[in-house]
Length: 119
Length: 110
Image (cartoon, rainbow over all chains, first blue to last red; front, top):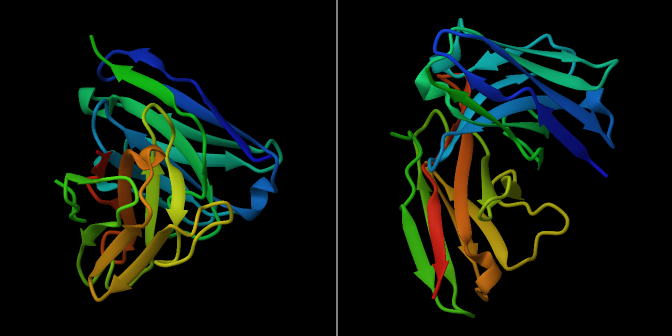
């Protein structure tokens, strides 16, 4: 069974940093693109970033470029999102999701982890 | 404001057929596949349609997707109460190098 479990969310002050993790199991992690998608409270979905199977291609939404870094550890079956210079508008549930191709935001999703940016 | 445009709401009665539209541009829907996601209340999104018109295994054939030019549609036939959810379209954008989501459509089963 495919499982994606996010962790690392919490309350952080504006300008602060947070590192999200996503533990993958039940499939060959290194064969999939991986995505981060977020959802602000009561709002719609927003794609954040994705990373190719071997990490050689990475894409970000404009609003997080220069602040967020996506990475992966294929040996440890883990996906990460390093978030720096956090802003109130980054407050959201962050989902990790796997995909076979770069243009799919996710064919399987985790349950999400909540990030709250507030003083 | 989303680049992919969906109606904010839709509704239908049990057994009815409803369609949800998704409008984009040449650099996204016009050039790439469209994906549809279903998000039940309090749950994570679930892939409903991939490659514009393909259903993942386990998705009932009551759900179908189509694409024409820079627009796409999700059709749900034989509407059931458990279909009450938010539905999102998505497509890669060749100019932005990003996946774009529509604003979402809240489906109500009356």
